[in-house]
Image (cartoon, rainbow, N blue to C red; front, side, top):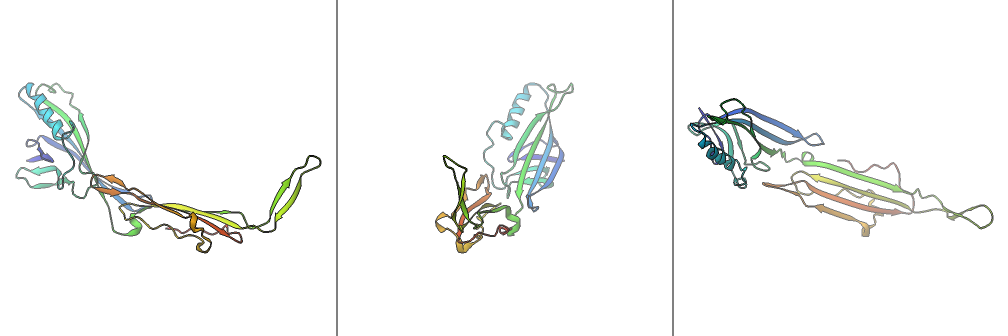
Length: 253
């Protein structure tokens, strides 16, 4: 016989039927493993000898699963799943240790509709979920996003102006035989679990306008058990006595 437990809330023996234990793997947009997700869907059948006990048992159930806001934050080592009646865990147990947000209660759904409902029994389904980061420790797998863009402005050719007069057609006049080359570079990188990544290398370091350089870091997203999404941004401007090569490609990752 088995007993289903969630945190310190323990169901009576065989009151819970584990309908499904779903294990999923998600991947980043760069094709690397990102999250491992485990989802329990359980069916709970509360049986009583009298209708007066339903309210008490359902209230205890709602409190135990936090639907009344009393479950509190996730605790280190908290578990949910099926245990043998001697307390030994079965293979269907999820642990909050190492998870992102602990064990989350997603849904409590009353499903029973036969004649025994609210007479001698009450049937409901409960869905639990835990997500775990897949951190290989390798740089390329922890890098979620890399966007690095360059833009060349002008060609270094002549500059001319078109002048209009009160009488006669407009006149084209060359004001500069050659013009300076200009370019911009910007982008961002997001690391899944930190640390922040260094910005991209300036495309044309010799012609970098140092006073225009901007490098920033966005606050990581707080999760219950840590932080994720460490974003670095960069912006560079360049000027040169000749035009920049318009087919130069930015650094890739």
